[in-house]
Amino acid sequence: MTFMEEVLQAARPVWDRCLETPFLRELRDGTLAIERFRRYMIQDSMYLKHYARMFGWAVYHAASLEEIRLFYRGMGFVTERESAVRLSWLAEWGLTDADVEEMDALPENLAYIAFLETAARQEDMAYMLMAILPCMLSYSYIFRKIAAECTDSVYRDFIADYAEDAYAQECEDWTAFAQARCAGLSEERRRELRAVFEKGSLLELAFWEMAYGGCERRGK
Image (cartoon, rainbow, N blue to C red; front, side, top):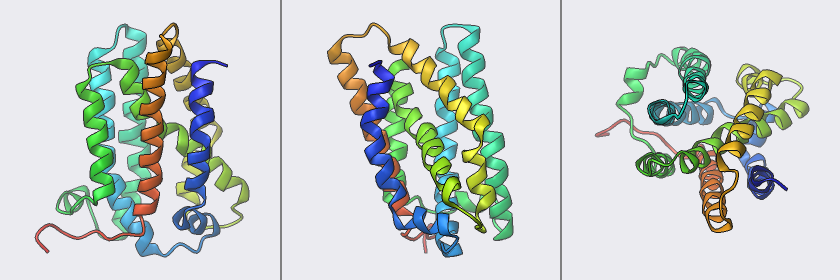
């Protein structure tokens, strides 16, 4: 079994727990209250700003032009593709990114952002990959399962973005890149990196659970 096969095998039970959260069950069924989805979108908007910065850090530390292109492509997906759907939903609620900047991140979100910032400070490409990939890979896993069971949902455009084959292929490319970057490492080092990926997956679980929380403007 390759390193990434081990990593993904260990993470899938956590991702399956994500699928069983009330938020994702109701998203699949189309019964999720719009206010809960709104809270998620606001928190995710805050998170994605920091997530995109991780790809910017990686572009700077990339070892080759090929790696620069890969990370630049990843940053483009976050800032363009993901932002397009997100901004359309925010606009429906009369919100802009500037409005979101005036809101407080919930504790689970702050913990996830801190995790990313810690990974960036390591200046270690393998460590950074294990920090950013749980978000990307878990979304493909989760939303392809949701799309297979979802017949009709007001959230179908959001679901479809992460369930499409092109996104799954992108995730396969990143998995292969991570495998190449982590090849030949000692068992102790592999264990350390598996733990980073597992922590990221658990933070993903906490993020889905967080979506049932609140979101207040600063100072209110």
